[in-house]
Length: 415
Image (cartoon, rainbow, N blue to C red; front, top):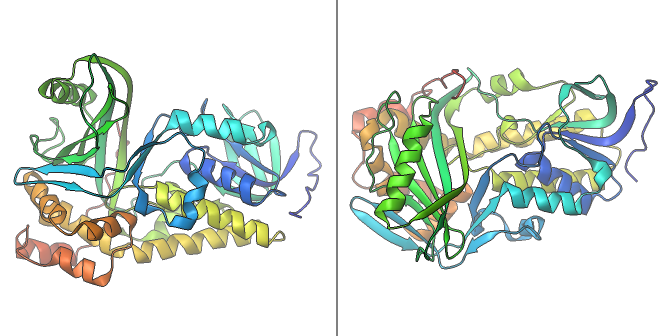
């Protein structure tokens, strides 16, 4: 049995084995994993918004998630493509065979609401403060817990360096079938200039055929500043739809600005957001791919690791769980150092309007190598192969970037 609750002595205190603060991807998957794999654990997930997951779409390659971990995503209403995916560059076009998956936050929310016990969920509830003994809500209610997990959003840190991935996507409902059967993960044949005020950038369009008539079109660019001109991006999405002859109406939209971390001091960054005795997970805890900003594979791994740990060690303290998550974060930082180096190459060695050449060089490589790259499991031969051949950037700039600590993440609040 997991620890029994202890009263706190306050009239409105409620005791739990685990409280998860933040019902985004990481927090929601931890709750689901606890429900499925640690059934004796009395947990509660608190989310400030009206639904789990906010308003997002998460996508991943099937090979990003290890086979034994894929069961956690069982039951979600996914979009999936087993015919592979396309990429397009000015001098390169390919179809790669890897299966691709995508999950909308509406389906994420629906599944969690259907499966998690109602008493384990608190939506539209803001946590005012967290500590090792529980959570205090904005209305003053005190919720006691043996363990607290902080899954709130990523917080930029002056201790980290890198750039930003800026995107806006719209779902079009076409008047006639659009004709696509595979996703287009990158169409970088488009103009490489970022919207005004953000300089040049690596830009591409990302396309998902969600049904015979629904298509999701996202304009994405890698830039030095966390700025978004939403009107310009909407216009670019509309232009792309028009170019492909897709007429219809916009039925959904999402936008975001994600960090692309190229270096820094992870210990200092974690110290800025850490609360003694509180575990850190999700992007706030550093669990993302440094170059692609993908988070779902790492969220799945962490959720299962936490659930299995609590199921096997019911006496585990909150401090021990916090240490467990911190060790995983630091190990993730070590194992992804290569990708941060590539991020520095992208942001420092390549001129902004030439960054497309870096990606074009990469996508010309062998398909299995690309799979392992996205999964964050590149082998040493993979790493050497990526850097081999005619350099897509000037050698002196590449050498400087190799030994650079990276450009500090701009602390300006993303628009």
